[in-house]
Length: 380
Ligand SMILES: Cc1cc2nc3c(=O)[nH]c(=O)nc-3n(C[C@H](O)[C@H](O)[C@H](O)COP(=O)(O)OP(=O)(O)OC[C@H]3O[C@@H](n4cnc5c(N)ncnc54)[C@H](O)[C@@H]3O)c2cc1C
Ligand code: SF4
Ligand code: SF4
Image (cartoon, rainbow, N blue to C red; front, side, top):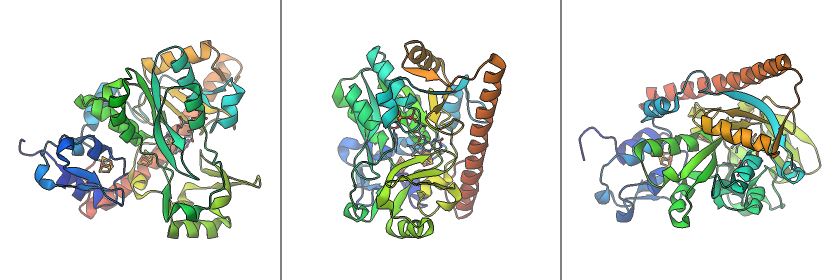
């Protein structure tokens, strides 16, 4: 392969050795030398060489990694990105009309409703979503039915498994990108993907490079994301002490302007992000995208009252799905009154999202500067 291409060695130095790897598995899953078994995920869920001799030095792993700045300019250009939070056409507060969806949803159930609408009206054959696997754990699945979608909605943690039973480390992060590879075996033609900003960014990079089967992902619904969490022993105990709770007693975990913990006894606790550094994934503290700037639609709780989802339509495709779900009665908007009141509400919501996005960008950039001064990532 040609000189000057960054390879897995660079990924190791700039991303993995610096603690910035998000463990998405993309580099291993989409390694050009996959059949030659050049890369593998280690027991610590970090990628590593299985056999360096087999590495083709093509640089795909480096290019699609969401942490490197590689291809960012190309993705931005394709997407018509503009500051401060990427392109968006509309911002609204909405919720599912179906009570069964609202009952299980994280916020207003808009994400699940949009997917149901797309499935029912044959815009998609399936969707990559993340189903609960354990107390906090999520795993990606390809949902093809209403039941699949409903079982992936929400952020309630059913069951009462003791956290110790799960071992020393468990995370809210779902390795969605690994499910993209699984599309090959499923004979699906058009699939939606729900993901965090890093996951949507990876898919957009794959699409920019023409990596198959990323082309099957025809719609991306991006979640706002301040951070994901990893509850390893020390951080967890510190958090439990600070909050005076047992994490096993958590019934629901939501993230909006802070972390909202609902306990089984009905109590609700709000924990500001700056008190969560012990349990934030290290990679997340250097991440700069809050509002999922490259998705067709972005969704979060921030900016909306309880029981509603804030939704940004970013592309023609995204606006089309939103209008379809609204006109076919899958979702309803929060009544805001006259046009002027609606504009004022839009401005307020937009300002809140921008403020959080800027806060996250500043945090991520500060961390990246620290890492660069230690000889870390080249990312701008
Ligand atoms: C890790 C994470 C961090 C978030 N941070 C914020 C934040 O800081 N501020 C904010 O306002 N909103 C945040 N959100 C978004 C918010 O929690 C809701 O997901 C969003 O408002 C949509 O609500 P809904 O009721 O419309 O979604 P629902 O209809 O309940 O659907 C939720 C969808 O999210 C998928 N999902 C659940 N967990 C994960 C996961 N770990 N990884 C990938 N997909 C998943 C489900 O499969 C489902 O398709 C975050 C979400 C996640 C998963
Ligand atoms: S973040 Fe993902 S693509 Fe990047 S090194 Fe880690 S596992 Fe590989
Ligand atoms: S903060 Fe969210 S988008 Fe950024 S690396 Fe963590 S999970 Fe991904």
